[in-house]
Every structure is written in structure tokens, then in C-alpha cells.
Length: 87
Image 1 (cartoon, rainbow, N blue to C red):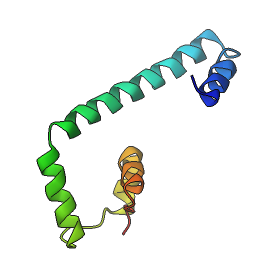
Image 2 (image 1 turned 180 degrees about the horizontal axis):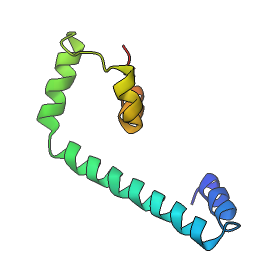
Image 3 (image 1 turned 180 degrees about the vertical axis):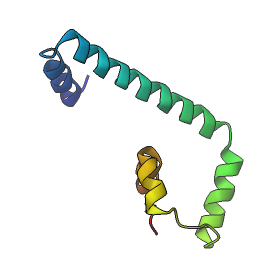
């Protein structure tokens, strides 16, 4: 376990049972979400390669910042791929 996760757990232990359950549910939902994305992306490598090729030749359209704000995980993923949602 990382030091940061140990720190989070130590902090969470000081919370009420209700708050601990809420945080646990959020973490589990996030992990489930990540697993779902991993499976979806693994099942569609050809589609991803096509999108990457289209982006490299300027065929893609910039993501509207207002739309990106509604879907923070998408904006974060784009930033991780060195693409900004408002470009």
C-alpha cells in the first residue's frame, strides 16, 4: 500500500461510520468505473487507433469546455493523453 493511501485511510478512520461508508462507496464506484473503461478500451483497439490517426491529421473536433466540465473524467483522460479538451 502506498504512503498516500495509508494517509487517506488513517484520515478516514477518524470519520463517522456514515462518512466512512460514503467514502468507501465512492472509491468502489471509481474502481468499478475504471474496470469498465479498461474492458471497453481493450475491446476496441481498432476504433482507438482510428481515432488517434484522425486526431493526428486534424480530423477531430475540439471538445467544448462546457461539455468537458460535465464529464471531468473524460477531460482528465484527454489531458493525460496530452490533449486539452478546449483545443
